[in-house]
Length: 314
Image (tube, rainbow, N blue to C red; front, top):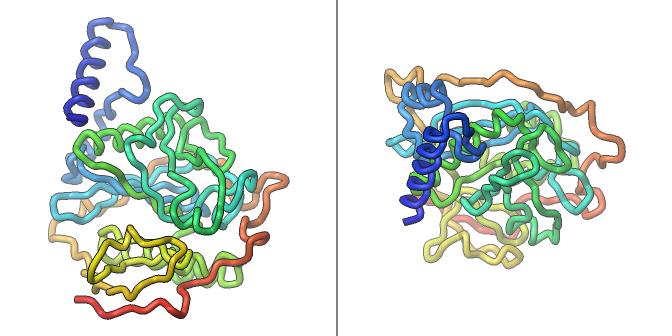
């Protein structure tokens, strides 16, 4: 019923706009541009199929992926992030001016068509992991206006497209989509560059999620226990998402990843489309007063704890 209501609302808005002639649709109701629809078609992507978003701070890039009929995600576009605040490292507290890093989920209720920053998608910070560490802060967004105080800010034109693609995935029946916010592309070379950073143990766990998606083109299971992210795990009986984020981790099964193998003739679907645009932020332009990382006052984050056990999976 919610899907039907959304479709009816969009159709009504379009009808009213056409009848009014010069009345422009509100930003959150605008249809996707024709060239965007054509690219979706060329890449074999349903406009209402599920989506996945990856963010990379150092590169100031946001990737949008679409799921195709084979269940795998394919790259749609890479968008420039116009601005973000803070430095490499996760957000910890109010006022640290850090943009979040971690595994987040956006539901339809977190879409804000009335944002003072044009349009916004609330990341859902703090998530279960952040709350387990008693981290605080709110209204951490992906939004427009190219202004950031702890958020990832796009230009208005780009946030309109990203918002519309997310909107269409919800109309298609998706209840949510994941956003993985990384400090940088988590290659072995980049990890080596930051091996002495206080956030390195935390990033090692995040790299597990990055590597899993790179290998399989499917989303990893992410759970929280012992105040740690645990990636690509399953329970023999039960749902990992229902674990106590501060409780002891049980014995997990580690399913064996199934590597992604593109089908012959999929060269265009595999093509990386990089959108040109402004990137105002670099690591050399940290605002005055911003901390180098939010971790210093709360202690560094360790990796997986010794009492976590795993069993081989099928």
